[in-house]
Length: 475
Image (cartoon, rainbow, N blue to C red):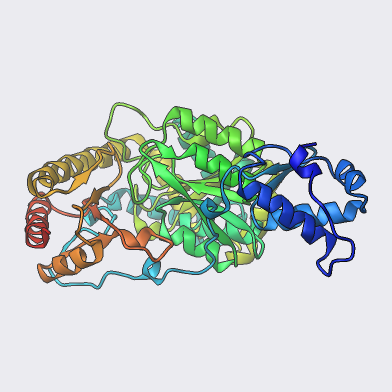
């Protein structure tokens, strides 16, 4: 036992409870550095024997410190000093930042950099019309009957083949068909989360997911992002102090930053999920939109411990109005998620599922996917070129995501993103401020520019106008 712990004196006659006296004395030793980070506190029985108190007193003292995030416990191992000073431990976020749920006002003929949907002409309308007709001709009124709550089995077979092309090898019984990725996140929240639970999210993050988690009365902890994914040191420090129900992330072309995780960080993330007994929700909206030589390898493809819930939406790659997606579920939580899906809407539209299966069986994935990537790649190159021409010379900067449908642009020092977006509105250009992806109330120095739905001419004109705004706002 540490000599300084041995030197703690407890006053039996004091009005302050013994557990509190001990906890406050230990807190003082932690605060002044006498007990170093991640060092182990003495076992409960040894402490009780030394101070001549009941074991319950020691347990209460340790719990008191744990609630203050000054220590953390490992099941079957003991209690350890926090890896971080108390002032550096993040406070959970338990309320909504209304900026997350603001919607940019519609403006006629505006150049709109806020929309992430593809233009109507890229939707495979003719092929789906044939699929709808084929299903109706084959099944007549039966096309509109309910399907299995998990999803139409032939469709789940097709989805298994699709997932295999991304390195995810799974079985039909692990797939849950859902009405879009947002429903998947909401169902996971409904099935797994309880009031007061903690969820880890990336910083910044997608506001739809954050809203679903917060609506269940949970608390969110933000994990800082680096150029190749979450800061793993911070993630492990926070995992020691909190016990999140799950970690929410996007492995490629993250919303809003466009960051993709390195292989090293994907493997480390899985190791930490196993070590600290938590699940990971991996959302895939934009993996199909990859423009570089590297083919995306989802986190789920590396998930040998079955810790990842993979959620895929087809809204971006096919058509938003389909409201169709899938989840790949670890076996341990499969039943709870299936029950949550059933009580939410019984099942996703059987007719749409059958039509999608018909479309995929006849047309496959690759042709349409290739067309979308070619289109997206062209728009990406145009957006990058125009941003370099009109924004970079004015002090703005951005990384090259090599995929997705947006650029995450850092404005010059001294230029507030909210003010910038308001100035852009005056020039009939709509832009998403970084505050829409922030859980806190702090200001932002970033904007998101989504280019998928704009013509090349509008991309250039819009970028030029944004450059003009930067020129006007230069400190």
